Image (cartoon, rainbow, N blue to C red):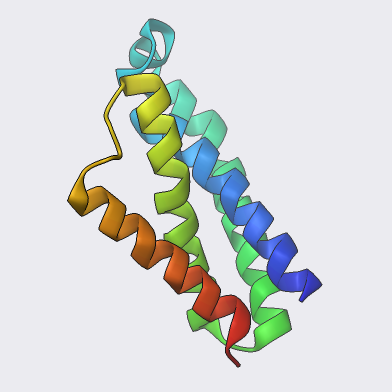
Length: 114
């Protein structure tokens, strides 16, 4: 279980940095003027975090599907508060809330079922 938790933590870190790498140009002037530099700096870090997150989860579960689904769900869960905070887009629509519910359900399934 420690591998899944640590791998998920690495995914959350990677998704947070990836959010700023891909959406930073919408948030701040410096990021919008330095898209390539931001990508060059954050890209290797994000890729390494995803790789190690996948490694820890796969070593624990011996199933790549678990890592894939946790990676996807963590991305959605990170996207919601950051977009709400930085861009003021509400997550409180039926479509967004249903998607959030499905992501949480996906995470619960991956943590509880063998």
